[in-house]
Length: 220
Image (cartoon, rainbow, N blue to C red; front, side, top):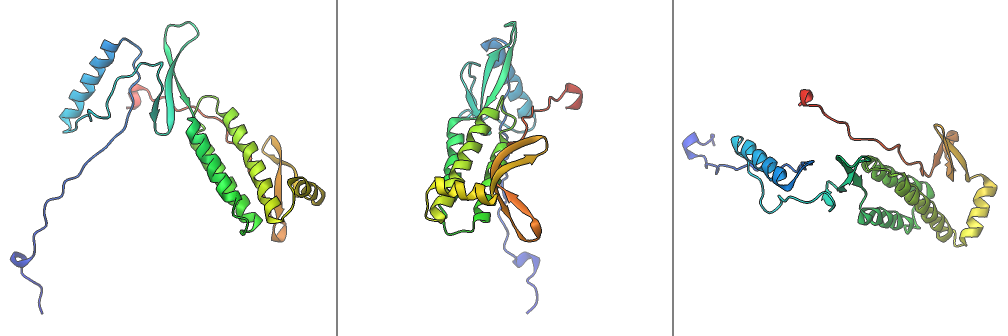
């Protein structure tokens, strides 16, 4: 059998493509000025064949937080009260979500200790790296790190069918719970020594906070 002729081939229906872009514009001015900026953006997008979603587009006062890419954003007056500064904060439900994920891992009593340690560390590290751009996130990071340490202690107690107190005493006696240095920082955490002396520890060290880089008009 030969290939069908071009005229015999089934024609495909034309496919339509959609483009979605989420963005936030912070306006240091009146509501009328914010509406003017919205209209200008709407006109600019129209030149590219794009439209604003009426359902998802709104103008909100800076005092009311809005959710954007997992962060809560609201305004805060600067020291002299002349301008408004954008504040990025970590939503409470996002903090509860990472705690639930860590608890879920701590309940897998059948897995090896090193697997639980690596998994919990990776989840905490990934979550913290995403939210390191929030304003003053170290308080939240410290709280989650402390909880993770406790969840892992519960994991050990249940895995060895003993009390947390007994597990901690045994861990400090055999050196699997001690102070670990990471750069210039030091913390007490759990350690597992693998073959050839390689050590794995419960990574309770949160990343350093960072600021979102400002882009000047010349870079756009």
